[in-house]
Every structure is written in structure tokens, then in C-alpha cells.
Length: 128
Image (cartoon, rainbow, N blue to C red; front, side, top):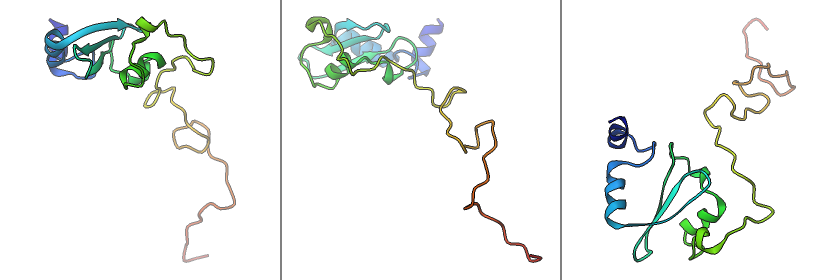
């Protein structure tokens, strides 16, 4: 019952009810990646989509599937025996908005205080 309610009220967690219905009617299963994401296409190969395993995180689409999803290649990695290039990095999760997000020196969110610099603003006061 919880999964059904999530499909009705959330779009970021797996698939919605509308996506499930469209996939059932028009979708042709193409393959699954190492993260558990499932890839589909229409029978005429005009539309391609992914149903994420869990939270919708587009950075979790591997390079081979990304090329297929954006119509850069015609054959999916499952049919082509795709091997990533040496320069392609493995997946790193998007940490924006989390405690592990990148915060450069001087950011107000870093625990250390920003060092004083020569171009810092000094407020005017009538006494000085």
C-alpha cells in the first residue's frame, strides 16, 4: 500500500502511476544497469526513458546508458557489449544539499572562520 501511495503523490521516488501505466501500454523493456535502473523505449524507438531504482537521481545513469538515452547511439549497452572508456569516471553521488557537500574556504557554511584580507569592507562610523 505504501508503494502505491508513493506512486500517486511523489515523482522523485521511482515511478508515478502515470509512468507505470504508460510503460505498461507502450514500453518495451531494454535493460537494467548496475544500479538497478530499468530502461524502456517505445516500439518505434522514438521515446526512451528510465525508471530509477529509488530516488530519481540522473547522475546515476552510467555513461553507456546516457548515450543511448540521448539518441547518441542506436544500440543499448546490453546489445552492444559496451565497455567504458579509460577516461570515464565511475559514479559519484550528487552531494549538493547534504552535510558532505563541497564548501570552499570562506563559505559561511564551513566550520572554520574566514581569514581577514586586505580588501575586506570596513563600515563607516561617524566617530572615526
